[in-house]
Image (cartoon, rainbow, N blue to C red; front, side, top):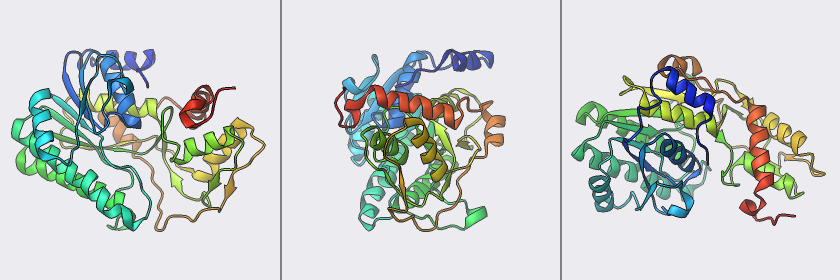
Length: 327
């Protein structure tokens, strides 16, 4: 989990925001997920009073002083009771089923977790009131201006609909929503089902990673930078109603990223490209970092190479996290 670095804290201090979250009541949904755990750690380190909501909320998985609130967003009464109990001033809504596979079996689960669960939260917050709701959208949502209006997975469709509901709640019911669009994040603690940790851990175990063609172009952001972007979105005034990209503005193919990992790990095994099919209707996903810089004063600090070095270092040091004993 990641506290903000001294350099990042100096950035907050330079724009007068280093104390803006201190003592604030902050609710984070999806708190035991990859991004949620990093964000809870950073918020707590900045002095926020953090309430961590997830189905598997457990104090052992969270930073000290973070209060675990186990609940399922699909349960409307449970959501309403937690919002009434936590009385959050700021809410980060990160919860959801994160699987962008083009699988018919995911239609129901993504609808329930990512859309119905979000609506239950929005209703509870609109009824009680709060100062700010930061909704984590997705770079998987379609860019209508470039590629048309059709999402390319059940996950993307549910995220797109959830964002639409969030913006409707802002417009019609005055819910103070900000939509963030995190791009392809990576770093310590990420599930090995994701391509970057999957590649790293397989090579460390001297196994052959089976990859698609690798032609897909993504904007890959190190989790420390993404966490900083979310902190700024919660702290900086004047952002309600905005949609903010959180990425690097640099597109990289999966092929190049995987090859970079292979060169760094120096395994006797090499990635096998073309071993699994490409997803249909893939388009480049690159953040509008200039607009983000204007809104947040934020530019990522870690290059892809620097972020990969830190990520590989963490997985080397924690083999138990991916089913491998220390030697």
